[in-house]
Length: 340
Image (cartoon, rainbow, N blue to C red):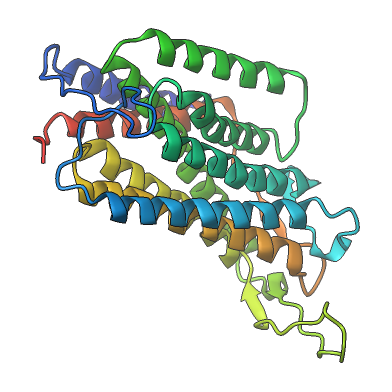
């Protein structure tokens, strides 16, 4: 690693250590709320001025959107007869890898979050819900690992890391007592959420930098004229400039982070809860729209090339530490915010 990488790692590590040391050793622990359906203790206190009807409406809206869009995305990405002209490719070091696996994981991510949201509606967030909540975070880890491995699964270690993540997170989430169990689960989730946004942002910037002003990277939509009695022909807008469609991933992951920040910092606020649910209603349609574009659009001259960022050891450590700093900073801010 270069001197600059070592210096960056040292500085970010110092910031992380200072953050950890700044957490109060003693603090007022709020009383846990209970699930209205099961009576299980939840990982949050009673929400002040909470309108149950509004909360259910937002929750059911997000569940409906994720269920429908998750199904459609899985259908789009698992088509065996998908034309090669619609397939994007990750490009790094002269090697192109189709984005097929990445798109399938994004689709599964949407659908698994749909399952986790149903479990939340029935159980509320807590130890029992975490069994399903892990599915959401597990797919985020899987997507990050695939991006790190240039768009593919290189070895069986992928499944080992996934299994270890599920085992460790499940054990700690179950074994720890309130509020440490909820804090632990929230922090590990924020780490993956921030890493998600950081990686998607790096991919967009790297692709834009490498493509430069290459106008051949434009993506036309299907514009074939409609044919009578042919249900496969539809009207679409004409073009989207590549790599602008990647901004859907950046924006979606950022909105997801904002929703989680609101729900983490203002844990007993009804408004924060509504923002959290609305973030899901926005994030996953954006991800689904990206999947739609990537499976229904073709480049004018060849494949849509997506350049992956540097995955050297130094860069990976820096990005990981940044995700940890941002996650712990989010939780640290929560200790400054009094109950609503």
